[in-house]
Image 1 (cartoon, rainbow, N blue to C red):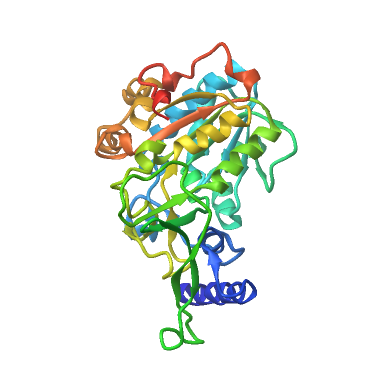
Image 2 (cartoon, rainbow, N blue to C red; image 1 turned 30 degrees about the horizontal axis):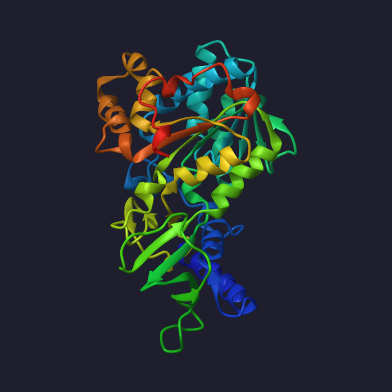
Length: 375
């Protein structure tokens, strides 16, 4: 069944290639591979999220690793609701629904039982799983197909920005090229199972900063993630946003030694660097350039509230106090959330807010170890 799905998606991409003259920019290819209705990775009914390969899943996210991730984030959400005078939480890309369940459980424990929870997710198949997970919360949870013209609330997004399509730039010598996708030439493909290859075209696009050295260099730029932030700024009137993801500030992202970029694929809890194979059957992501996202927010009128590592954020927000309730058997997974050699340092948290909601308070997660100055 999965191979049939992949072949159908590949056939759709071939049709797009024909319409576009034989070449697709990588961000378009990535969008089709992940989000094409009924066929893309996030639009089909594969398991995706889970803690063990035996579950049929492809990767684990923090809410699947430990419920105390979302419970701790719930404490931050509660403070933000009180500070900004909101009664709504908006989650983008809610995955299995585990994070929403954890945040709502913590909000209920803190007396925030009137808060409504709205989920914006492109995946219809994931929505069914989320509805099952969140059934106990009844009509407090609502699914939204598209962002309204005006809204307010506290926004959360865990591993959302990394799944937004990126463009690939390749430097050879002193020339820059945009790396796109083409159909493999005759002899390397067949009508029954088309194959895709990389194809570079000269471009005026550049990374946001100079890359030192003469060596060949492959990297990503993130126009869709930055456009997403600008759209929020146009429609979001009050609240605070917390985005958690793996990534770096610009100076690290475009370091001369990071010459192969950050694009990576996930399937069955294994990684590879070839997004052109097993199309629709595996996740495709790139690390987040947090400087670019922060600048897009700031330039659109959303001041940055803080930026730090996931480990520091969770400790600041009260993970240690909550950990007193954690069974001994769960403490190893809890440690993975904060240890520097696990998720604690690779994952970062960036927060911003509409100007009217940014003054007069400091989010719990940034009370110590804020790294906004590094962006």
